Amino acid sequence: TGSTKSSMSFEDRRVCRPFLLNCCPHEILSGTRVDLGECTKIHEYALRADYERAATTRN
Image (cartoon, rainbow, N blue to C red; front, side, top):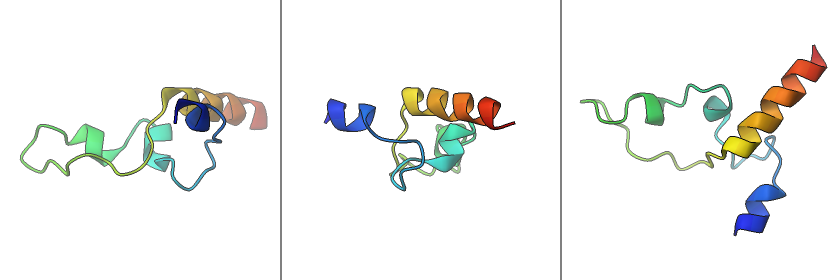
């Protein structure tokens, strides 16, 4: 499955969009009284880096 993730785009529907912006509520609220549990979407730091790179070249 590792090769699948590395060939995946940050635009894939399975990727957590808030994670790309560093604001996934599942991570932010982890360990609090309103813990939402584990996010069902993909959290991959390489995809976040790809997203940030694309955002800077787009502007």
